[in-house]
Image (cartoon, rainbow, N blue to C red; front, side, top):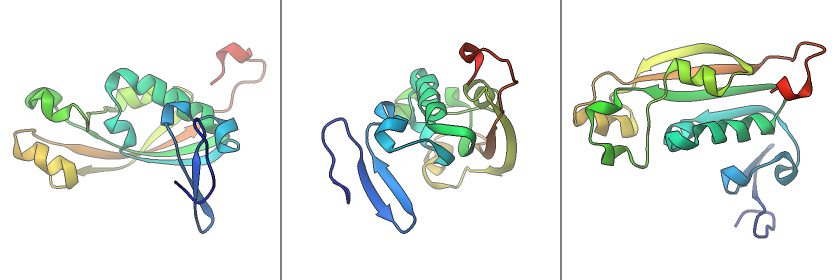
Length: 157
């Protein structure tokens, strides 16, 4: 698949104008595999479908792919998961609150750019129809905080 050849353990590359889109197992992604680090990343609810037990690993991979001045635009929704049958959420989406975003992306400043009621948007409409109350979708701007000079490497993001 892709516009460029790939082998097992590699990423297929798709080219769309000035953009390169990589297809691979997210948890195998690395700067080496993808040809370097990135200045910008856009996560439009991908984190929301990651099993909550793997979110830290997901965020660690994303941290490792970002350059020293990396910026992430993250879209995620928060809702009461307890108000719906867990089977409906087995493949996501899962709720992500503001505090969890801060914990997952601890080396970044976190700014909320937008909040909107997502009860009538896409997959969230179905959740709302089966009894989930307010579904708040937020767009976060995450900007990497530069390390303080003299900070040991083990303590940096």
